[in-house]
Image (cartoon, rainbow, N blue to C red; front, top):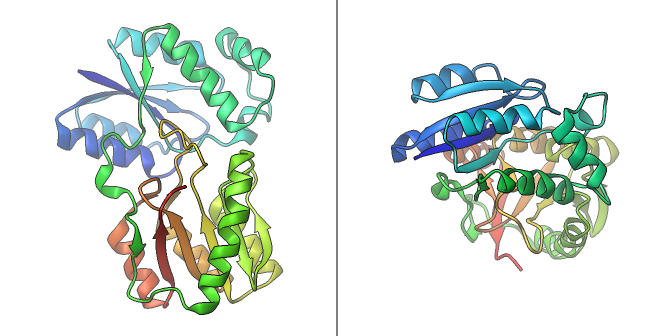
Length: 272
């Protein structure tokens, strides 16, 4: 069976390719010109996959590629920034149809509409962690140091706020200090939100990143990695709280080793 991969930016698509290779699955990769690392071609080819480059608004071209390749199930991995979609990209007829039909243009509405267009062509968008179950955060303290009393208080406060902004599909990350919200994620992504918080109130920050209350694991799955911890160190953040079983940890061993080195606590709490 050949799977389709809609590859955005970052490391996520590369991990899916490696996971598919381990599982003996073939991939047809639709790489987004404005977002995807060019090294995706070599990675896909080494795993026996084929690559088609498409523009961020070329939904019709992507669907035609998948149908030529006999794809029946597709995985969406890696961020495609909203600013790319709304900053001058010229949509093809298929994408224009999607955009015109949307009552609102948040992440769930936009990608949900793309999923329906795929389904209309017999292509099911499946769980983006399909090949990556071992990379999901599991409940509990993940570093040598557990959150201290101050951090636990900030986590408790932060979870209430973060779950509400996630429910509203505004973002999935907030940064807290002394039970006060320092920064809320919008379109810039987790790491930039952390850096912004550091500029506003450096030091003693707690980062809370959550899944949405009804997280659709087909897209917009929360992800963290080494760059997240690096941004925390830069901002003076000391604790990271994640949603267990719903958050992907890229380069887990390296990420947690860096956190331990700088006494950053990482913990995962049960989803609600």
